[in-house]
Image (tube, rainbow, N blue to C red; front, top):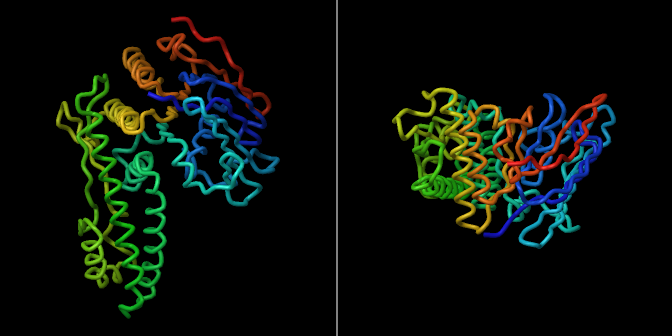
Length: 372
């Protein structure tokens, strides 16, 4: 299996990091330091090596270090079985984020074909009890790791739907205004549905028969709208037939934007939303690991994992099991925790960084690997 890793990372005016330069290898990276020191900011920077708004879903201007507001820049070298790719992304002031790959301007969506990044952060702990939007976002991030073109299909669908919703709010009744938009929505929406189905199937397959200390989740795609349409023709009919109802509501009431991801704790037969907080967390970790296993199987290399404060919510046995699974995958996982002792079970298999804060500026210091 080939390796994929960030081996060089340089931050300029990103969040609390005025400047940081790191050189690491492909082993897991354990980052420790007090709350507020800038640990999460460090892994958030890595999340910007993938398409989108990063693991905090921040606006472009919000990640620039204050009070300078000079803009921000992230430079990275990505090692892929000996081949090095240079990735640079950033923004000046409130300007849009830019991306270059090996010195050439690129779109954000192009990043999905270069590096696959998965993350788990504390804000996701409410995934199973919050609204469906958060679960769709989680599912689409996972889907993007399998189907890099998924972002484009999602954008096409959202753009066409916004235009259709504008017509609905304006009470436009002429069918000719809707035809082209609904055709675009149907084609893009069918692609979104198909991509999500590929992802869910891959996650299910990666869980079946896996030797893991984390629970298996029985997964299913559902639709919170009144119409569960599958395929472009079915979607087109649903949009056409639903115009009157949608006009009364002022928005599109059916389609992929109303889908939901459901999970059941398989060993207990209990829906994830009804599980304990610890069980819900374990299910989340299980899905992230299944996603990584599926990618390793399908592409020949595991993704880069960003796990924020994950160790603090696990007992010693589960922490050890998590590190064992990450190392067995051969994944470069960037993990944060307040205490270095949380990573004792990782031992010499990992590399260690200490993050401290002084006068509002973060400092990152490499530390010797811990003994087993």
